[in-house]
Image (tube, rainbow, N blue to C red; front, side):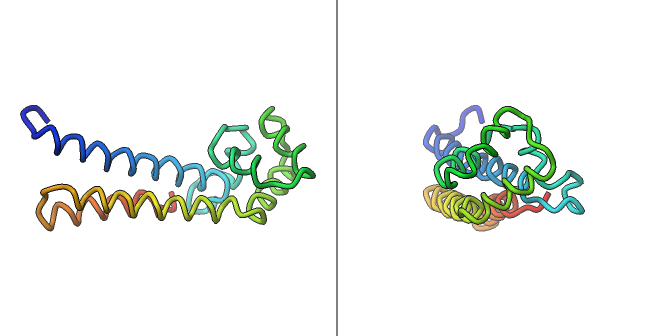
Length: 140
């Protein structure tokens, strides 16, 4: 982007940060609740691997104390299959997935607002907006 207007570069950077955050959050959601027939990975794979994600941070805030041992086992990477299912269900019941979906909606809305600040033509704006939505709402 050599020679580009610095304001344009900054605003595109803001848009890119928001879309990148949406990509990462959707990846985390798919790693816990993704359909294995679509993703090609077992549901709960990230929990089984003990992958640190914002979903686990939210789970630590939102889950009842009775589920703390599941979070500790996840953090240690020692969950077994039934524990993965139990933790995934507890996270769902506590509203972790709903929180993630609301955050994704917010990220997409903010990325669209960032485009409003750009001087780009209709087709380019539509393509960027569509990319943000595709990233946030993908199933793989």
